[in-house]
Image 1: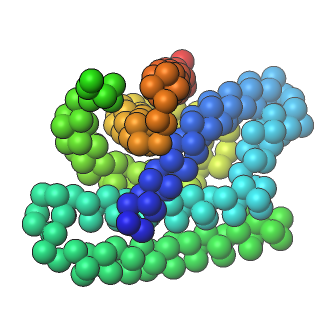
Image 2: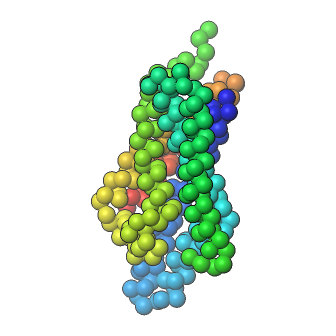
Image 3: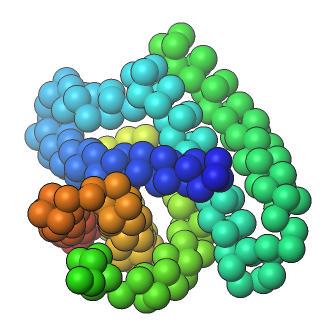
Length: 130
Length: 118
């Protein structure tokens, strides 16, 4: 029940994120094009501003925190998805309990490592780093 | 009377979700590593406008993301439709939500592909 609910919630969140992400990605590309064009015309300050207008978004600490939550959703959805396949195709139903424990453990371990790295990067962002 | 939702070929979508999911595990983790973690040469240079443009000029990058869109969007649309079928009880609203979900999926698919090719 918890596994199923978590899969639904993380899936819905990921789809919502993907929707915004695709629009934001095009913005990034357009900003990059504009910056390169301005730089070619010798407008260094304009290029800098055009690039910061799009790239500055990912340097925002609140966005950075959201990215850490996103990682948690991605990891859970991926690991639990593998558990679902193990149950459906590889007779995993006999090991339901163990598989669920393994899912929670793998998600937590991956999140501890990669979420930790992102958190370190986030602290770096807070001090104005890139 | 047969319920309206029985029209959807659930068996197909059930397999589809698992098949695409298997590839998405690999794709999504690779994408997170490169784009969100900056864990490659490519992403190190992508912090600059020139780096971003270089990525969009690379055939491997374009193929990877085209496949990503093809796998991820129908997987996501089907996932949302599962929620729509389960939680929206009113037939009319459910039909409307189904169309809106497909429309949103199509919109981001076209927009994503456009970003890759133009």
